[in-house]
Image 1 (tube, rainbow, N blue to C red):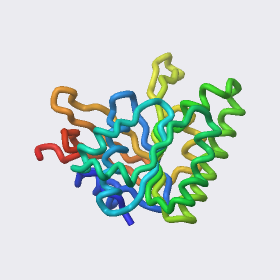
Image 2 (cartoon, helix red, strand yellow):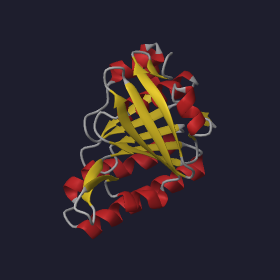
Image 3 (cartoon, rainbow, N blue to C red):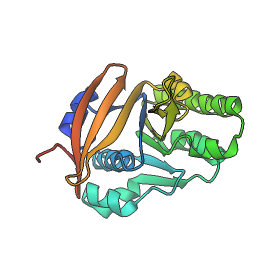
Length: 218
């Protein structure tokens, strides 16, 4: 099963939409459309008659925006919102979702609480990998779509320049089935760029408008 993003071009890039039974990692800078995409997925999931869980670790959830995208406030009745204040809150959500028979689990943002709680690099990586292992096992065993968002950081290169890399990307990628990077392409028009990195590669453009995600020109 697929959960549609709202943009046909983005769905085509993903092979039909966000796949259930898999972990999809979506990362990018602040303002690159990560949370808006997650809101659109929640709206699509509820319109199809399924339940969704939204785990908010950084204060990003906007219920009024989800209602706008879904076209009805009743959509929120099918979304369980969890404001995770620590990593334990975040990790424990997996069992709650299993009991609720949800078709979509969103964690926005995956690594922010781990970054705050774990000062040592190796311990932080191990904790994130353990959490993602649980998420991957859960997704596969329940046919639930797990979508996580993540940050980027500027990493130095051998030439002294800096390039953008996903935060803790080496650990996140181990258990992520699908990885995609988002970027703001044209702020004045609300155009965005998506680059699929795993399992295949490709790019797509999409727009964010009041009713949600759409194709450019719609």
